[in-house]
Amino acid sequence: MSRQLPDVQASRPDVAVGLNHVGVTGVEKLVTIDRADRRPIVLMADFEVFVDLPGWRKGADMSRNMEVIDKTLEAAVSESAYRVEDVCGDAAERLLAKHDYTTKAEVRMEAEYVTRDETPASGRPTQSTADIVASATATEDGTREEIGARVTGITVCPCSQGMSTTRARETLRDLDVEEDVIDEFLETVPQPGHSQRGHATLTIESDGAPDVDLNEIIEVARDAMSARIYNLAKRPDEDHMTVEAHRNARFVEDCVRALAEGVVEHFPDLPEDAVVTMKQSNDESIHQHNAHAERVATVGDLESEVGGD
Image (cartoon, rainbow, N blue to C red; front, side, top):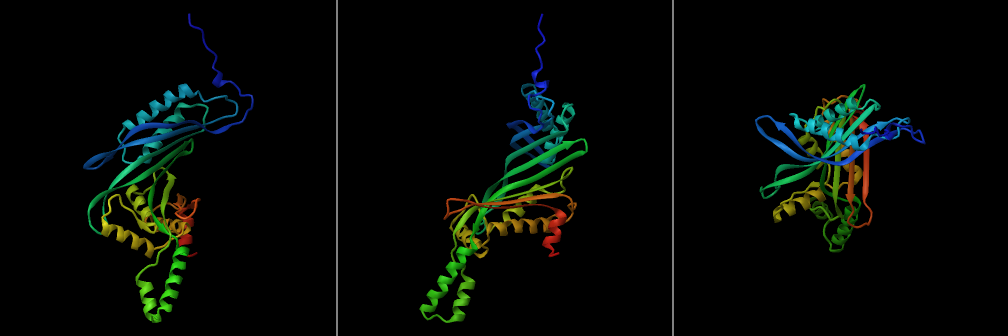
């Protein structure tokens, strides 16, 4: 006769402190996103799954919980979905229903997403990649879902460029070039500044699924930096990217503000209480540190600030 083993997980802990996140990370699943009249998108997604744990319970039954999580994710990814964030929302709601001791379930997902593109000068077909960022939080009050993307581009430092412009002006004056010619030259030919690879992250969260298109989020994020970059680049494309970036020099702070402006311009139908997260990180080329800026705000606040109120 088998002996009933004690359920240590359900016992009271020595220190009765509740925990916000208990779960697993690094769970990989194939996710299929349907598209009308087109082949579905298949993603290799990396999931993080959490529930909250009350202070009176020692553990979350991690080994048994992993089986529940696996079955929950399998059920969520096996059903037809048109939005990545809905996959997270479905999984979070299923987890909440299966755990009688928890008041909140969270599911986060990241996956690499490939889009078709065209090089800016030579017009060659190429592909671009972005990291999809999606999540959902389910409580008894409902489910909030988040969708967004992290993209890579190039930025040029305005301060460095300003010093180069001053040096060029002084050099041209020493060569007795007329002032109006100097002005015209500097207006036409952007001067060098140190450049860096930049990483822009833009996500939008709301009750239920945000009424936004993932591809449009990616476009807004790419346009927030000094210039876009491309996997394929012929010499005319390299020249185009270099000149474009130096004509549009931006600090990390400028990039975040450009993200805010892009959200207000491209997503006018979002509810005012939708939450927007905007981040910009630059891999500095002349420093050993990196530069970073971010803002989290409601759509209502962004509309007010971008509008100048």
